Amino acid sequence: MEGILVNVQLAPAGVLCLTYPLNNTDDFPPGKFLDTSGAIGLNLFDTPSRAYSTKLAVEKEAKSIQGPITLVQGDQSVVDEAIIARYPVFIDGHMISIDSVEYAFWGLTIVLLDWDKLKTKFGLYDFFQRSNMEFRMTRYDSFNDRLAIIANSSDHDLLNDHNSVSVALEASDNAWTLVVGYETGFYPPWLTGGCSGIVVTSILLSLLVMIVLATSKLHKMLLYRMMPKEAIKKVERGEIFVERDSNATIFFSHLIGFERMSGEMSPQEFLIMLTQLYEQFDR
Image (cartoon, rainbow, N blue to C red):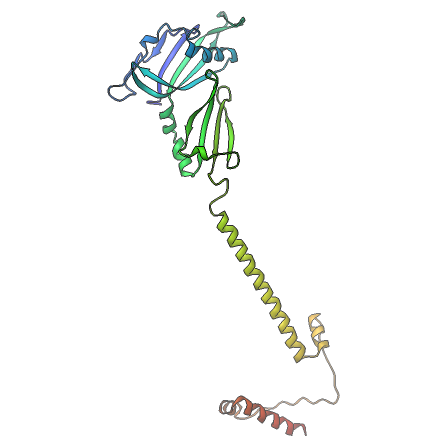
């Protein structure tokens, strides 16, 4: 927490009596320092800029967070974005009355944090930048009755109800909200191209199926031309097709020089030769 936790304070009954370090020079560049000696004896309940957050911590019996605010030393800004967290301590025997309500309140422990360094330390901006996301973190400033932006990306103003989501953060009073999203909405950059690819692929697959079906139909038509329909139907059903004919003769023959003759003759001449040859065999 070096450079982030810049001061720790104790305030019994809400009155600052101890700050550490009293003069912080270690967490700042040369020429800058945080001297809190002038705050000793300050009654937080009576200080307008501190009273609301201090009473809130006691009434809710939980930590209250104020800021980010600017911590100034003289006329120079020391911490541009400071978060002040106040933790109430309750011990029996110590009483305080706030708006006619009694609380067993001892006092407050207070820490001052450099919010800008805290965001950088935990890589808040780097995380969203790597994810190509826009973000905006806000908290409700009850004292000034306004919504304060405490962290944001450069183009956070592009976020709206259609391209972002909003999440309540677990802070002191759940008044912190984180809005994250993409300028184009929650759609990956490849979605348009991917959908186009799916459409084109579907068309190609449909054409392929159509070609396969057409080829299958063509094959069946050729089979019907070459074989009896009854034989094809039986084969398709997985049956054995046997047809008897007492007047038929099976003739096996081998033509010597068949390959040589087929190579020397044109297809038409070869078919005429075979036709004439088997016509003689049929006589």
